[in-house]
Amino acid sequence: MWDIIQEKLDEIERRENVIILHCVESGSRAWGFASPDSDYDVRFIYVRPLEYYLRLEPTRDVIEWQLDDTLDINGWDLQKALRLLHRSNPTLFEWYNSPIVYRTTPQWKQIAEHMEKYFSEKSSLYHYLSTAKSNYREYLKGKEVKLKKYFYVLRPLLACKWIVERQTPPPMLFESLADACLEEKIRPEVDRLLELKRNTSELGLGKRIDVINEYLDHSIEEMEQIIKELPNSKEKNWTELNDIFLEIVKNV
Image (cartoon, rainbow, N blue to C red; front, side, top):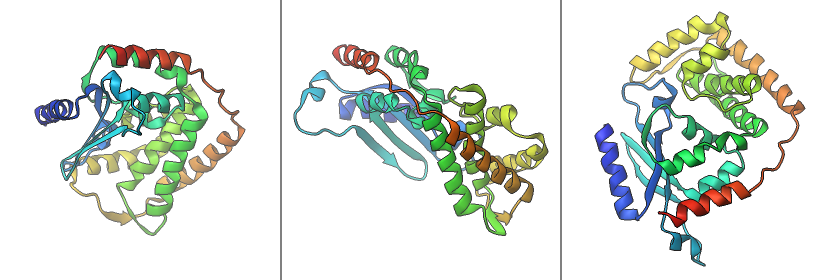
């Protein structure tokens, strides 16, 4: 699959007239709990020739290349990515922290050196808590629940705990978050589910796991209170990002 993804990236560069600066895995494979039949969530940052950014008409800033049962490939234009970095976009920080890197460049390294300066604890906590709450409300409240959805609530809540304790972007790997932040009393149940998730093509319905649900209820309430008490993030300067953008587009 690695070779197929590289061929797809080469095809994107050729047909779209772009240079891919960085490309990673962003879904369950990067989180460390992929099922045997999980697809590949391939995400990339790209740059176009300078003249593209000097046009008067609106231009697209995303490439949506492929979506099927095996591959989900799309990317963001460099300009879009840097604007989102200025706003501390959590998705961009996930790509920055992905343990699976398909392709990278010196230009991305230049960007990465400045990433954490733009990290906002409060906006990231809002994002992860909202993700956890929506999945919890939709999938885990009944007597029977979609068991795999426990990970789509646990992971963002553990990311919240990481941010509160360390004030840095959380790692993508679920086990790294669990080792650092998960309470020992629920670890055996979570480990059992994790093993099932990794070895079952579709982890279906099962009885609600009360000890995990109690932990989720408590953690959500705790994070809501913490967020209320956090000060708003200070506005970041654009100068550094403008300089990076201009240097990259002038040299592609």
